[in-house]
Image (tube, rainbow, N blue to C red; front, side, top):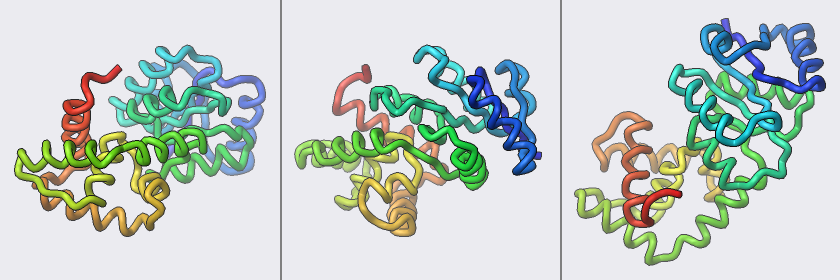
Length: 216
C-alpha cells in the first residue's frame, strides 16, 4: 500500500492530513523520519519549519531509502536553494497547501511526475538563455573528447539532465513536448551507451562542473 507521511507539519497542514485520509482514502501518518522511512513510500516535508541544511540532509536520507519527497514551501525561497533540493532528491515543491494541491502531488508522485514552482522554472529558463554558445561548445567538446557527439538540442537536454530534472520539466523549459524530449533522450542513451538515467545524470554533471569549476 502507498502510505504517505508528513514530517513536522504545521497545524493548518495537520487538518488537511485528516481530510486526505477521510475524503480521498489516502493512508497517512505523522511521525519521525525513522518511523516514516520504514512505513511510507512518499513523505511531505514542511520546509518552512526546517533549516536549509536539515532539509537537504533529510531529503538525501529519504532518497537513499527510495522514499519520494515533496517539499512544502512559502514561495519566497532562493531559487538556487530550491534547485539544490531538487538535485538532492525532492520530486515536487508545492506552494499551495490546499487539500486539492496536496492530493494532486500524491497522485503525480505515484506516476513519477513532479510539481515545480514558477520561480524555480523561471530561474532555470534564465540559466538556459545565459548558457552562451561558447559554453555549449565547451560542453560538447568535453563530450566529444569522450567519443560522444550530441546535436545542439541534445546538448541542451543533457545540460538539464545534469540538473536532475524530470522530462516534463525539461519539456516546459525548452518549450517542446515531453514525447520529443523522450525521443532525444533515447538518442542520448544510444550515443553514450548507457541504460540507466541515474548514470546519465551523473555523467553529465561531471562534465558540467569540470568546465564551470567546483560547485559552491
